[in-house]
Image (cartoon, rainbow, N blue to C red; front, side):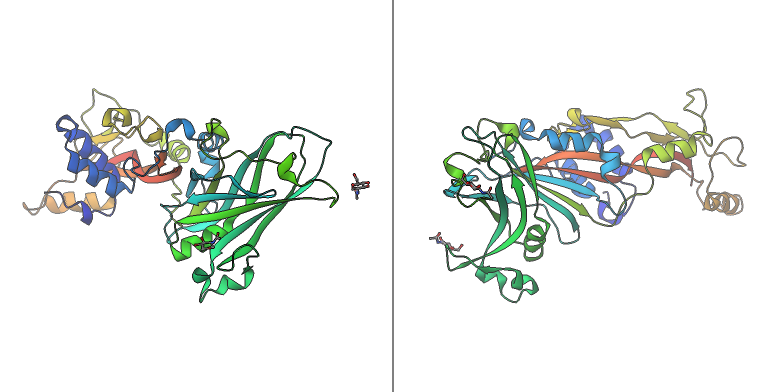
Length: 368
Ligand SMILES: *[C@@H]1O[C@H](CO)[C@@H](O)[C@H](O)[C@H]1NC(C)=O
Ligand SMILES: *[C@@H]1O[C@H](CO)[C@@H](O)[C@H](O)[C@H]1NC(C)=O
């Protein structure tokens, strides 16, 4: 019926299609739509990652998405919370954090990657600075034939694994705060080899060798799945797939405001009309934001000869002219002539993704 695969553009059209079928709640069509838009469905993995686990950090990034996502910066930001067994203390000064990255494809370039862990206030003693380092632990098996192998050395704790130091910070014991470590190289390692689970080790050593080891009093880190849902360790990954859409909402609006007048219900010519897509009504409750958006639609006549404020493509002129000579040539249609992206944030297994989706919103209608 619909050759969805053959349509490389006008995703907006698909949204319209879904809306017209809403009344029937046609499940297969909804699945096809999500597939076409490239939005995964509701997360299926265990444990289920819930709305209230989305960090304040990600919500703030989403609120500033226009600034965060951009050409040469990133086209998507992901955040994965650590797996349930994470944060376990391996020894007095060593912790292990595990992450699973299920939605990272090779076509996306990893621009930045951070480990974020929360360090609560140290309870006793005087201010003691600690050197805290992040290590990437991999099976030696996975290093074979790898150009990055030279950065890894054999682990003193287990002869079948290798370690690489990623980043080091000096932390004080007295204050509580978030710590952010650069782990981009580890993320690239997993992305290139398609290894889902990432093991990161946190080591803390007192700067002054005579000071006590951290675990006994100084430094601790909040574990995964504790009561403090908002303080869970997470990794944040910025990626760029090179597809940044230059037509931003605000730019487009400014550029086109003067060209096309506002929707006027009394007019029958081709123009942009309101159409609100409500994600809640679609049952897409795994989408954190927005809850819906103005997608708009194009409707109206494309009379020939053209007049007034109608936007007409050159091709539409040609087609109209040919149509007046040959009866088999149809009239041009009222269709979007400019579309803009929207930024969605949605839940995935163990995390959340913020990404720009192109061609979701009509900026301008015309006869084409
Ligand atoms: C050593 O590492 C291997 C590979 O990751 C693992 O299967 C094994 O359980 C580890 N041994 C110990 C004692 O932790
Ligand atoms: C290290 O700690 C000891 C004992 O608290 C102290 O005497 C010494 O001055 C410290 N050294 C440095 C470099 O801070």
